[in-house]
Length: 239
Image 1 (cartoon, one colour):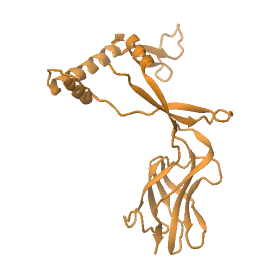
Image 2 (cartoon, rainbow, N blue to C red; image 1 turned 180 degrees about the vertical axis):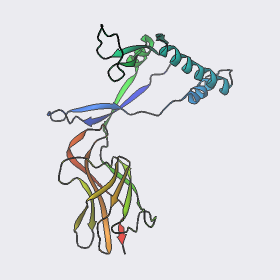
Image 3 (tube, rainbow, N blue to C red; image 1 turned 30 degrees about the vertical axis):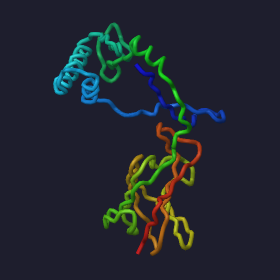
Image 4 (cartoon, rainbow, N blue to C red; image 1 turned 90 degrees about the vertical axis):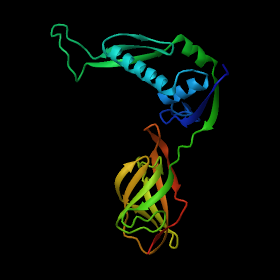
């Protein structure tokens, strides 16, 4: 078996007060499903048909889940799993409170899995890109994309890491008038998600504008200490 490589990206540790303090996250190559596993098994030379392999893998998953839910432990080549109980109990009442007492599923890597991980080569790719990015802008009134916008109507902004969060006064969505250089803040954020913003545009004069987003949002759901920004690469127009 050839040695595999695990790639890491570094993110600023915003909890720490130390300079140049980062934490690492794995840069995942992709997601493997039972269908993908079946393809890989066939590529290795399995004589079973793909549909048969998928059926077996699906049955294995179902049986493992059912047996765990019945109180069994699971011990496989990949992992060991068992149930645990969260919460405090009163021996006298002998009662179960669904709000407090919860059944949790615990997983731990098998010995073979730990050995494989220990042999894996780890490579740090460098600092992760935590800045927001605007990919597309849609005027929901005219359905115009990446161009004409309608004052006092809703603008949809699509991209990555766009969620507006943070206490800094600069946080928000802006339109920069390219002629007067006036920066106008959009005060009403109707939809606020990492991949999509819905903004009620202010009353804008005719002209050309640059769209800007400022935020302290980070991918790990925490706020970063400094504001990061991005601007759309295409100009927007008001007639």
